Length: 465
Ligand code: 5GP
Ligand code: SF4
Ligand code: MG
Image 1 (cartoon, helix red, strand yellow):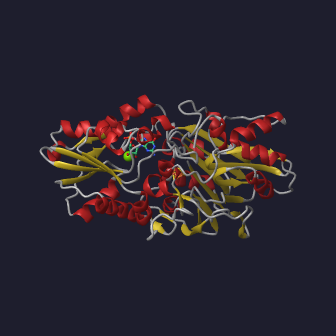
Image 2: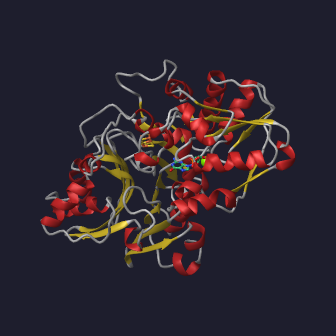
Image 3: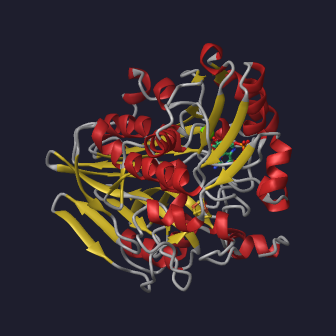
């Protein structure tokens, strides 16, 4: 998901809408905005579909006045796939004795089921099926006097990954979990401030990038500026390495590194580790493009747009059901026949998950008359599901969970299939020594199976680590 907040701008919601538009790649199912105005109080709008279709009309935006606003773009992870109801669309809002508060959450709470059980037993009335709503109910039960303090209380009970943007009548609040799994950045906009999942959200509104919110940090923004605190027990950070590979936008800066340049470096590593003779390097667009450029630069094999993407389709994997996803491949991608015919083609993609996209693409490429097809993948085999806010299917549906690399190659019916190594990936994100096996510098659970936070709910449901 993507989260965004603005403090200290007239009609802050307009800026939030733009920020969410820039973060649309992080969630396309639905979006919502809450704003507060001194006279008109809290208002919200939550809608299914793209930001540009919902939060551009005057009739919607004029219902969201005020100098503080937050927003959220959603895609459903664990649990509610394909049956999201509008009740599950964030931000969530609650009234407390000291005033109202709204929250928008990116990530996944790994003990949400347990918390929900406890809270409902004690009388909480949940409005949604979302794990994120737990935070509000925990805040309601806290005995602290201020909303930021109640948030601290609540988040200390929450396990898993969370980047949160929240607001009160006068404050904008940003928090990252102690591992800093999901991103969150601070920007300066005139006399005010903005919080965004990624720096590309700051760029679109002309805000100046100030810094990242640090793992375990809480910032409270008021008319007097930014106050920072560290309410959690400090831990070694474990940022999601997959944000570098796929999830973030290539024009964003993560941990001081250009996502685009990282992906290009991944492509170079991939070419060094797994060279092959061929005529063309083609990306599977758009997610494979920077890595394919890196592969081409390193190998000296010409880069070509052998597959053309229809720009009017969204990301395939965010489509909630398998059937739609299957159709999606052809609706979204088409082979550039003239280029491909008679050629030995290297296809570079960011990841192989279920293998459905990859199989379809291979078929299309062979239909177009390619002589050989070599897959090169810019991440290690995805063998484990993510429980921290990226939508991967159940373990059984992950190709790499049940097949060896060679079995996958046979299944995809390609001439060769190679993945970057985990160490190669770490080198590409700037860890010259590779992965530190004692203290891995990132979360890489979907590749390694080493989960930095115990997935309590999933273990209860029978998941075996
Ligand atoms: P597959 O061949 O596994 O069906 O799809 C791989 C391609 O689709 C990659 O380009 C990747 O960007 C995207 N993709 C499809 N499904 C998923 C998914 O569930 N999770 C992730 N992270 N990416 C996916
Ligand atoms: Fe990111 Fe994978 Fe960790 Fe999920 S499991 S947070 S996708 S690295
Ligand atoms: Mg892709």
